[in-house]
Image 1 (cartoon, rainbow, N blue to C red):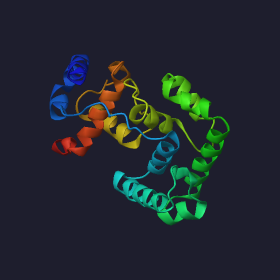
Image 2 (cartoon, one colour):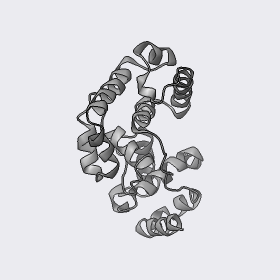
Image 3 (cartoon, rainbow, N blue to C red):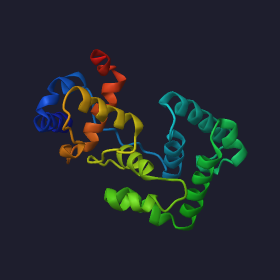
Length: 200
């Protein structure tokens, strides 16, 4: 019910986007995924700069290899094992560096789940190769933040460009606060359902 109310508030904030919101009315807040932080970091870092299909295929191989070794934490796969799954050296380094930091101060990193987004972003940026996009994905999909707009996401930026080109040239995603996560889900959904093909 909260999602319906929040979507209604979004529609009132962006009256020119009524048809857009009608087309993506099934969009919702991401369910918080219950997963150890070490595993969530593997999943998010793996997804960087990849299509959903490619990231999913690699992650399934990672999960399978970890299961075969009876590992609780995916980050304990070796460099060679990650490479065999299709992961790049840079991503492997980021995952292992985060694992090493986490093991030295578990309490600090578990507190990430409770941090406001600005503080979370600053914390995430201290890890080599892990950026604002990673913080955005963790906040939205693992920590339950309802007011994060993933400004570093390529698909989201494409969606914002399309809204400004075809519907509202003055569109500002920040006007969606405090429901920016839901707005992002609507934009992703618009791409999934090929909403923009009608404008070609």
